[in-house]
Amino acid sequence: MDEIFVATGRRPDTGTLELEAGGIETTGGAVAVDDTLRSSVRGVWAAGDVAGGPQFTHVADYQAKLVLRNAIFPLSSRADYSTVPAVTFIEGRLFDRSGRDLYRSGSGAGRAHRSRSA
Image 1 (tube, rainbow, N blue to C red):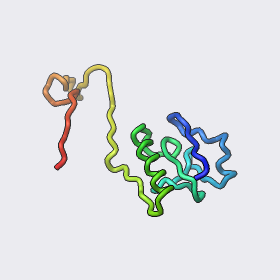
Image 2 (cartoon, rainbow, N blue to C red):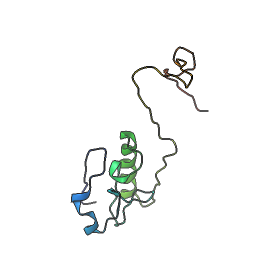
Image 3 (cartoon, rainbow, N blue to C red):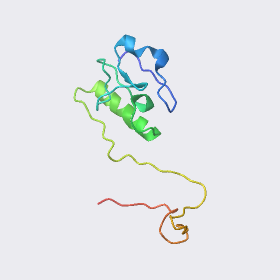
């Protein structure tokens, strides 16, 4: 590996990089990658928002580790997004369609829950 390119942001902004001139395919501004995060050019991988997929910091971290593993070791590891945690924060109360306050109703909405896996 000769170079590592790092960028920050929420949207892929690859328009000025002239990736197509280097043979790197893009889709909607994101680098087109396979399930090992490898691009269309040998030795070029992408991770984070520029690779498309879920746009979360923890996913970018997971992808970066996967890219390093795949770049260094001969056997390729494939990305698995089947258990990506996501949380939506809101300000205010939650109400169901009938107008019932879900927090006060004891439904569990508005409270944090921890599940244990066997």
